[in-house]
Amino acid sequence: MALLRAKPGKRLGPRPGQSHRSLDDLVPRGVSDAKIEVDGFTVQLTNLNKLFWPDRGITKGDLLRYYAGVSPFLLPHLQDRAMVMKRYPNGAGGDFFFQKRAPEPRPKWIEICPIQHHAGLVQFPVVRNLASLLWIVNLGCIDLNPWYARCNDTNRPDYLHFDLDPVEGAKFKQVRESALIVHRALEDLKIPNFAKTTGSRGIHVYVPIERGPTQKEVWSFAKALAQQLAGSRPELITAEYRIAKRPKGRVLVDYNQNAWGRTLASVYSVRPTPTATVSTPITWEEIGRGIEVEDFDMKNVPARLQEVGDLWEPLLQAHGRFKLQKLLKG
Image (tube, rainbow, N blue to C red; front, side, top):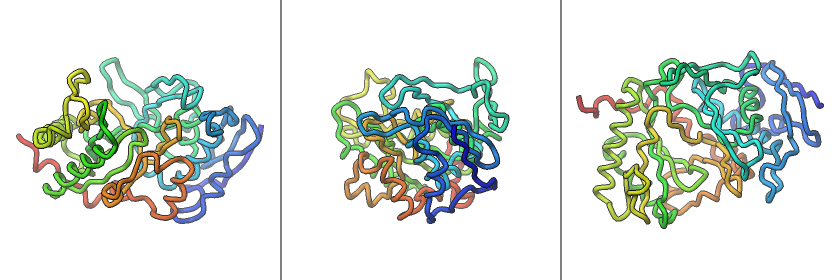
C-alpha cells in the first residue's frame, strides 16, 4: 500500500489558473490501494485499478485523479452543504444505490450536517476539503449531489434551479431552445441566471438568490414560472411532473427539483454515462452556437477550466444575488 503526503493547509495545491499536476499526482498509479495524506488527514483509497468505464479504460483511480485536479474550482460549490451519496460500487455501468446517512465507521474528521426528516434526524456527510472529497468519491460516488441550502439553515435555499430534460422523442436542440426561453424570461424579470450541461441529457439553469424565502416558497415560484412558460410554448415546453401525462417530444422544465430533499448533480460532476461526461458551466452564447452534452467530459474539462476559469463563480458571491422575496405573493 502506497503512502503519499501533501502539506496540510487551508488550500491544497495550486489556485485556479495554475497547473493541477501536483493534485492529480496525489492519487498514485500502478497500485490497487493506497493511503495518502491530504489537508493533514489520512485518506484510504481502495480498488484504484478497478475499471469504472471498461469500454474507455477509465479506472476508479482516474476518477479520483479528475476530482483532485478540479478540486480548486469544485470545492467552493460544495461548502457547508449536505451530500446525498449516490454510490456505484461497480462503476458507471453497474447498479447504484442512494445513501443519505454518513456510513459507519468513518473518519472522525468527516463533518456532519444533521437534517430532520419524517423518519428522524439524518446525519449527512459534508465535503469540506480535498480529503473529504476523495473520501466521498472513494465510496463509489461518481457524481456529487449536494443539498440546495446550507447546513446552518437547510430550509432556506440560496439558489433556485430548473432542470431542462427532454421527454421521449425530443432532441437536444429543443433543450437548447428551451434553455434560451427560460434565460430570456428570467432576464425580463432582471433575475441573474447561469447555465450548465447536466452531463446527462439536459441543461440546468440556476439562479443565485438571497437567503430568506423558504424552500416551499422557492419551489412555488419555480413552479409558477415553469407553468407560465409551458403555457406560452406548449408545442415545445411542458411543466407536467406526472410522467404518464407528459406529452412526448417536449422539454420538461422541471421545477420539482426544488422540492424538499431533491438534489441535482453538482457543477463539475462526472456522470455515469458511457463517455464519462461532466456537468459543465456554459455560456448563453455557447448554447446559441449549438453545444452538445457530449462536448464536455472527464478528459477535457480540466483543460477548459484552465482556459475559461469557473464560469459559475458568481454563484459563490454574496453580492449580486436576487431578492426573490419581492416577487413572492403574500
